View 1 (cartoon, rainbow, N blue to C red):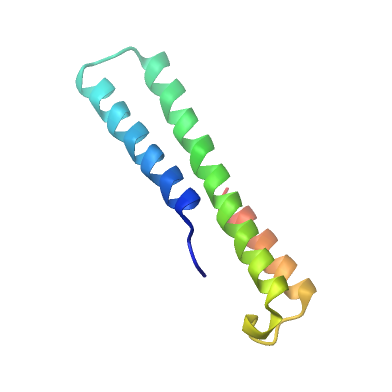
View 2: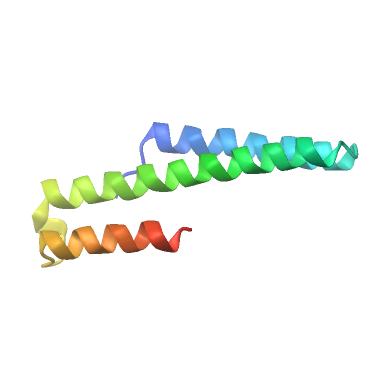
Length: 87
């Protein structure tokens, strides 16, 4: 699967968020602020996972020759399982 610039840029932003959280912890910022930023990072990761899984599913449906002899139902179930596993 090809990972586009949008996916990579999302991860770079998340990486920056994590660095910011570490800096907040080192500066002993208050707990609420740290938790808020951790929650925002988790949400960003969840959305990125959804984007990657969705893009993979679209690619598999549009190019069934690359789907390793799987039916569309199997591909859908695989995508759902990936999303569930990510939680």
